[in-house]
Image 1: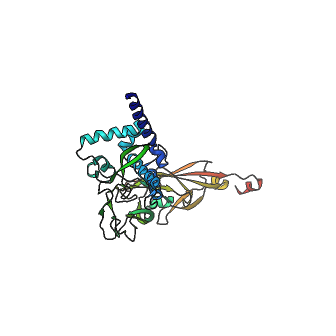
Image 2 (image 1 turned 90 degrees about the vertical axis):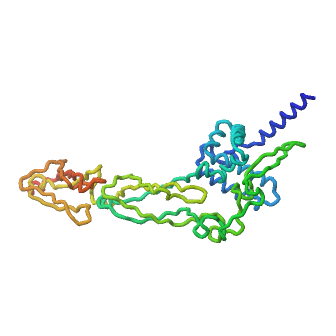
Image 3 (image 1 turned 90 degrees about the horizontal axis):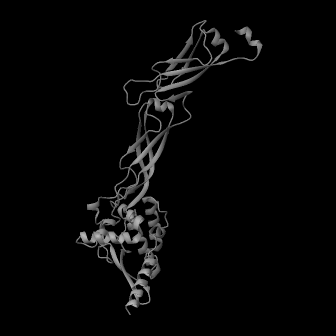
Length: 362
């Protein structure tokens, strides 16, 4: 009789373990999925299996609860690390140890869903990034420019409450705990009881009676957010400016940063090339100019004052092919410096005619 009892208990354990699906599989994400990917999968799946959309469907409700469990673990860095290493049993053991340390058995779950945020701190949202392109002339002179991005913001109509009257009410299903006890049949006459995310309030412990007309209870809205960028003279290519706390916003997390990277356009450089704080330019001379000298030319420069750079040679002054002339102080402004500039290097290319009729002109 004792042997039969042991075998029956073993079957119960095996069935219960088999019933626990891999959390990554539940959400349909890879094991190295980012927080953003996990949250996106969670939102899509909860919309699909929400009890309000599947009234009376016990399978959908069980799936909804399973999705909530997976989300709770995979969005907590510590719990996710334990799960990745030890699986479901590791998470359960961790939960049991934490319950022994706390008076309230729901404190561990409150850490997942807002109630424990005072101890753990609010989660931080993901960073966002964008790129702005400027001409070399703009890099030389600097400028202020406005730009806008499509961003998520906390709804200003309801101040992020999601409620038309700004009020939330205690969830009627979980009585504000954010967790419910679920009974699942795992075999003939055998049932498993466990706690899971409340399907009514999705773990928040609160529910909204009258949804905000602007955000429809979502607490956030998307729209254009305006920014200003100050391009300082001589700022290096690929410089990244960080706008602290200006990423996607939500009442559920502290906003991450917006990272703005600047790049140089391939047009609008007036023939100049930038290498560090110096400028380079190729100037073409005829063979006559190179051998005889006696020429002068003014080439447009990059500054906003319509200045030019004057290049000249006295009569009889020869310019060798590929000769480089250095014009001090006519390079790029030194980023962060005061009235400090690099140099301009002019490389001369001499066009050699292939016809003998040009010899008389030399």
